[in-house]
Length: 321
Length: 307
Image (cartoon, rainbow over the protein chains, first blue to last red):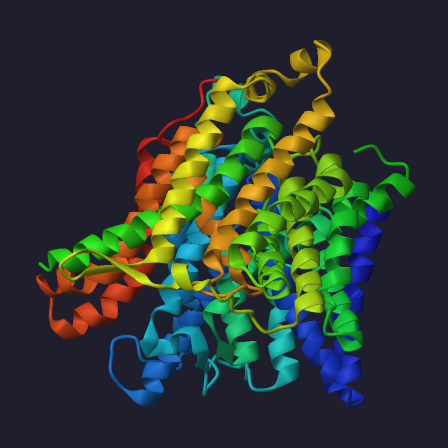
């Protein structure tokens, strides 16, 4: 097994063992941190599928997280306060179906338009669609608008109780594993090969007879649906949702996680989201001006670290890219 | 339909459009020539507003403050180009986005450190603080007319600069073929820095002009930058004419949408439903417009011929 594979397995083992042990020894704070990290990790893994492997720089991915979270919040709100009997429910499976379904639909609609464009246009149009979702929920006064919406009752799933931090973490962790395996399977399938080929040279793939547009659109929809599921988990974790989750700066942070860890690698997004959350936590405990060193770090990473953290490992092990 | 109100709102829309143009023209100029995506452009707009706000209190006069703040904002832009942006040019667009995203964090936090968390409201001189009655009932603040005049003036100045001066000729040449311009003995690095500083000054000017109406505040850059990007995408990235037309269209749509959409909706739905739907739809309207235009013309309304 090569070094990248070893690091990946070691990293995932650490995530499986350390947070539960810390929780059992009374350090609930670290469990919170780890849960957030793992959930955002799923978002980053989903973004990596299109950004890393597909070369589609989506700058509006946070919208899917928000959609997934509102798919928990809105049914729960109506189940508690009445009206809209159609959607009122605490049923977690229903929430997941809504989160994944709506995210996939939103991805299909926005992807179909965005993928007609290329380069900077694509970056900017995905960002604008993200902002569109942001403003939509911002002006929905029924669900709190700017102030956000508190989820009074978490989703009810069979066998799993999301009120227990340990079980919520377990579900998030297993979901992350499945997401990583899924992306790995997709990337190494024929479909994934076409996708990566399109990233390398879209014209060549088109000449070979592939309709690259549909391949990219399908990848975009899969990625969006996966990220919507991460939103379902995040809503259940924070029990508070607001349009701020969809703001374009959140999308920027997701992108940073992927790039920081190393795009188009399996563990990269997880490494990135881990480092991101830890840095955020450490820096903000020192100063309220923590965005300043954070921003400087971001600039330095972009200027000097090619291929993110995984890129460092790769060059150390002498592997060719 | 209340035509007086309509007239006033159209004036407001044009004014918003011209402010958007000031921000977007810098973006589109920098993109057209340097192929550089600058998310931090909105932060320069904010810094212009803050510098001008401080100077207004220091010098005691808003207009004087603007005149001093303009070159200062240009200097800030020059420094950003020299120390960060220049190193990003040869990287890809993803790196531009992330690098300038980092720059936003740095600039916004610096503004927070220097000017504090509260916004600063900027007082106007008395003669600008009044209102003008254009015709019976249509009352417009004098300052808004000044914004419109300034915006039109700068737009005209830009057309002159780009089309009829040596600098403009170099800018156009640099946009179509950098290597060739450089080979002909033009100091391309200085030219790029100049263009960047010029774009920064225009963004700063927009920030200065809006600060007496809203106030200079930390979040203002993040709000306008997205709209400015919508403007240059709709107009065709790199096209000055496109940026101008798109800015006016978007300024009008945004203003008129917020003002009249609810009464328009009431024609087809209940008053209650209209009151809920109108704000949501009007907030999304410019994005819907962008989606529609890009679905039909993926390169925007006026794509530059070179790219």
